[in-house]
Length: 223
Image (cartoon, rainbow, N blue to C red):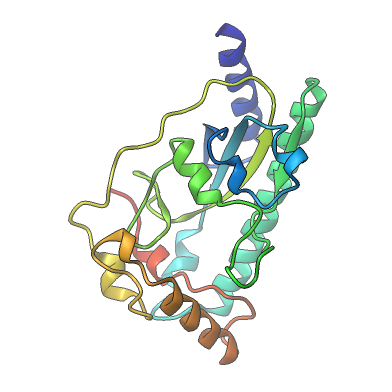
């Protein structure tokens, strides 16, 4: 027990020094079968570190009812930052004699279903960083949805954080502003297809070069 706590604190201190905003650890033994990784590879890891970086408020202020070139650039820079941070954390863990695998912050593996190697927000939820909101994003009590995530898989013995048993309550700001009307009163009713079609529309119009929006992120600023 003492060793797992020490591992947690040591890796957390290192990660925070890299500039991440939030840190949590999840027990992934029950969900790793969902990962789009080689079977032998994913069974090597029992734990996942969830790292998050807060978006810059002035960039989000530039958003109205659609993404902007400024937000697109910020989005890409955040992904670069998170990939760099996860690489450094993974290297730090390997230097301690354990295995670690940084999973890209934004990389589509299954284009038909728009899936990456794993769901960063699902790992983030299990790592105690927030809950899945009406906007289909991970919502943190302090940051709202104004942060992005990356994941490091590892076999270093850890104490896992507990998932947050929270919800968005009476807040419906994202429902009111969603340009695709994809957000519904119940998070289970989120219209993934409507959201995806609106993202493709933004890209076809030449507004941004990637399938992103950010409007619901802007209005979700914490509780």
